[in-house]
Length: 122
Image (tube, rainbow, N blue to C red; front, side, top):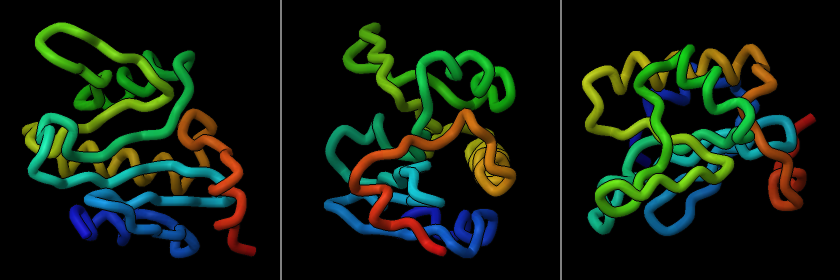
């Protein structure tokens, strides 16, 4: 699993579910992160952060290494996800900061989905 050192900074109750080249991280009935490290479309490798569009600006202000998804040269795609690219100079520090926000139950991170709810731990 890529970036497995980050599990030390997340709550012990997170649930990790592998997918093809990705690892979905669930916490308290929400998907919070995806870890991705594959050869294809490597510009999307790193950590994906589940959030809402209205929280993008404040999260990017708190963790400046976090960016929007960019497809092609200048095509920005603003889904309910932000990205921390694995090649960023501040990757480790920024990733730890994101994990700390999750551990503190920051309301800006996390998205409830039917699949996420099944991974709720009590």
